[in-house]
Length: 500
Ligand code: ADQ
Image (cartoon, rainbow, N blue to C red):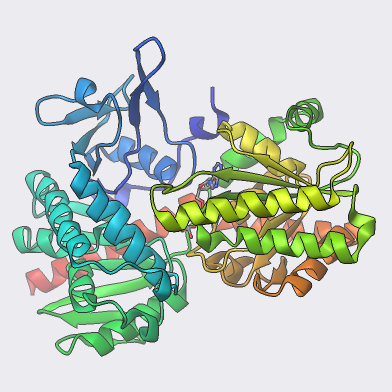
């Protein structure tokens, strides 16, 4: 049994007050495939948001609409492409949307990941604006909206996730004027000077303003969004202090809700990992148990600052040779969006820099950088977190960064130091007790790694304790409770307007 996923979220859902919940996301919470014998397999949500939301929808019942990208989806779904989940004891319906190759290319790899993703992270030079991408994005958003409209009624609560679905809320709004629509935007929202580069900026904002509630991780993104609305849409009236937009005779609330992790489950799993198991894990990957370990856990994405991190480590081993043979860096990477050329370039850059550093400093009995590419079950990932004396999170820009929070949560013994980029949403919450870095400055970054490695134990423990306290208080349940409480308040306001 996977200990982490066995613990369901305790977030209250009573605020939904009997309304049907419809969750809409690009990725599905259960993925159906085949094993080598041809039998159907089910990949359950392992971590992050999908794992947290699934138990909530299990309790409320309802529908989850997502892109059908599982090999066995045709076999497990009915004629309407629906399947009850969890498969062993279904409590809600998964509604799977089939997309053609052209749609996947235009909507997912195109507009979502080569326009909105780089633009929102401030990389306007990384974007590939193609009108075709936008046309397909709208068309797929329309299909998601149609699937929602089929299920939703005026009393429903519809919850959109992320940047893949910016146009869908306005489409749903037109068909269901009285449904409660909300959206959580998981990535950064840039300032106006960046956002104004987007050729379809008005349409993207207008699509999102079909919602009643829009959530961001931090106040900064919320303020950026309100500023962009104010400047781009003449007909919108923004009240920055109240956090509202008046648009097309409706009021939209815009709030920040910093996402947390399933802290209790991670901590419990971490407690159950024996020293022996940790030693086995280290042995399995050739991680020395005598010296110190720095750890990086990322999707292979150019926003995560992996080459910058390797450069800082190289700087450290070069300028401070005492760390050679003493500090080993472990990079747990997971391949991502690799059909996009910029992601292939990044993979090449990471491969080359790891090879260069290992060539330069490696000896017969020591490899400076160990790379783990294979899939690790959740409890092994938590075991790996515990092996890290120092965690290096060096994102160039990151909406939140849950890896930082997971690392902290796993350090139940209060040992370990978090080195954290000030360009992450997580830094707004954890910056005081982490060692702060700017990922672009290799020299300072190297100094910060050394500071983390030499931090007196008392200070380490003091900082880690505070970090853990924060992360366990503002965990995934607290995030969901805050959001549902806001839904209930806004619902009540809407009711009073209707009854007046
Ligand atoms: P991501 O960019 O994917 O998410 P992150 O928050 O760091 O970034 O990770 C999400 C989840 O993926 C975590 O639960 C983590 O354990 C897992 N993960 C990451 N790398 C992994 C690896 N190599 N192996 C196994 N698991 C790995 C987007 C935004 C973030 C935001 C999240 C949630 O870009 O800024 O924090 O959504 O809102």
